[in-house]
Length: 215
Image (tube, rainbow, N blue to C red):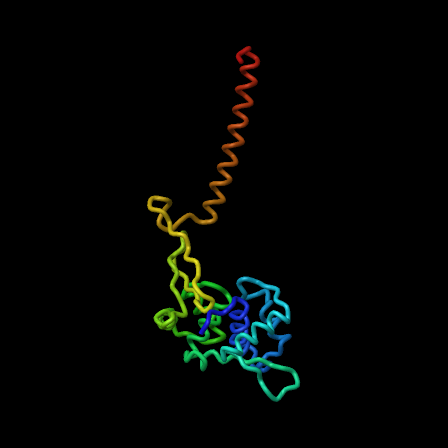
């Protein structure tokens, strides 16, 4: 299977999500599919795709047998076919859908965000299915290197091709767990305070030098 475009991945993820969360309105019409793609919550990144763009993405997925049009309605409706097309269990489909919709996440985050699609017993079961996806040829998921300041590594899907790894921390640069946002803010505030004190001291020295006639 060829790699998907980001919008194709978004369309596929939306169809998988809505099949589980709003079964009464599934399959989705084009309008509903566009609304799901452009949703402001539970989406990373947030996008503004047009109907024409979403329809083109859906047509691309249809050519790959990942999506098909439902029948028996005057309005064209779309259904996902990922599990059957790629021979994946529902657990793996749920994980890929959440990764396509929300971007890289830790196993703990995936377990939480998959709750409405599939309820995993524990984090180890999430990791088990992720490992299976990573072991496929070609792989469908990848465990990213732990980013500076993060306690856990994140996982990403590979359906749109390779993903950028976080930049490694250089040896000797900062503590093992990194610097928190609060610590950075405190350091910036201290830097601002010291800069103000230095400016005051410079002004005082110049004033004293002027009074003493020292250039």
